[in-house]
Length: 471
Ligand code: NAD
Image 1 (tube, rainbow, N blue to C red):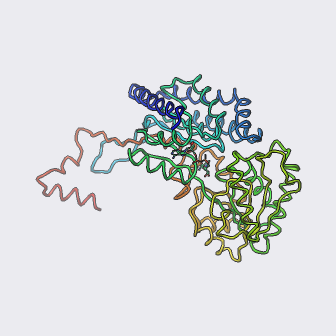
Image 2: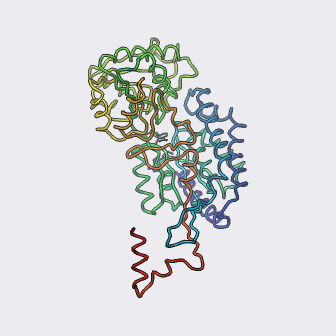
Image 3: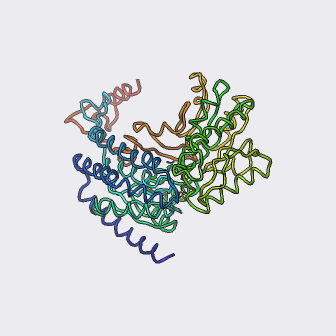
């Protein structure tokens, strides 16, 4: 292990101890203080928007500033606004009705902060995916330590500096480093671990957390399908498909991973998406809004996927001028009918490659999706709403959008999370608040209630009450 990693791990242990001590001194952070905490996060994001854009662009080589504005800065500020205006209501104890045998007792659920939480975040939206969970944790009254991805070091350093200026380390802190630090991080006795990243590492995180029985939220990846139905015009689907796939050059957990189209519409779909790409990025190589691939390793991985499909006879479509000026830009690529056992169809793509596969009947398309791991998102394009809903009825996914890509995740009041291999638990809005909250059930007994009669020696009164209970 490098000396820097070892130092970060020592620092992590000290920080965790400090935060735990601070939490035991203040278990219930007053709502006005939580609001002020959330406001600080919104302010530092707004006031340093240019620095955040520059840091992410430097980490990527080229990262669309417009996309950073909407998906990192704007997203976080909206999440903060939503949390700030609702936290008072979310944090209130929720009354529960009591059964007759406990009347006139009082039952209610206290919403209490879990304590000190750990947030491990990935590189693809390096600000949003660390800071949105932080907002939820602060709304719940928790303290937090963040471990951002090592692939976006400039963003991680900026985050570390800005949060250190705004918060005492006993409330919010950042530790940096790679997998070794991540591994040590997830072995600590946090009161909750919130992990966003690959399914492979997610499994390791779940195992590490299990050792300490630390509750864990896993926001993972997978292959999110888009199903085009017979009644939908490919020309109408082209814009949302191309937007969802090529936003951040496909490095988005809920990007449509592949399209299933009626056999007769495959070519029209491919051509319509390619035409749309030409409108979005007339010259992707020089376009500052067409983002580069995060690392040489990922670029090589994606190129190998295309070449494997090409060698297997799949048709590859790319816009003209595909020789990119930036070494890590990868041309927007459409692959028609790659083999289902190729890497393109067995691994999450996480890049600007869109496979389009033909199906003969909608049942075949649904079976294709259901034979695979439950995806993080599912997209259905259908004019007929009943048809779209019948596709939803017959499939499982973390979330879904109808006749759109990715937009369900922008509705702050809805849960965002996976199911099965694409994750467990959820956040955004009140769901995020609840992730970091312990719901503590309390019963306050009145001086006398009928259940006092349920005590030995059991006799006629007991029989009467137990009959009442089973009625
Ligand atoms: P990754 O799993 O490689 O890394 C994520 C984080 O885990 C990083 O901070 C990394 O340092 C840390 N890490 C690495 N090894 C670790 C270990 N052994 N123990 C603990 N932590 C460790 O993921 P990535 O490549 O940064 O992100 C891409 C993946 O994330 C994709 O699969 C994508 O779908 C998924 N993702 C999911 C969501 C979601 O909300 N569900 C959002 C974005 C990305």
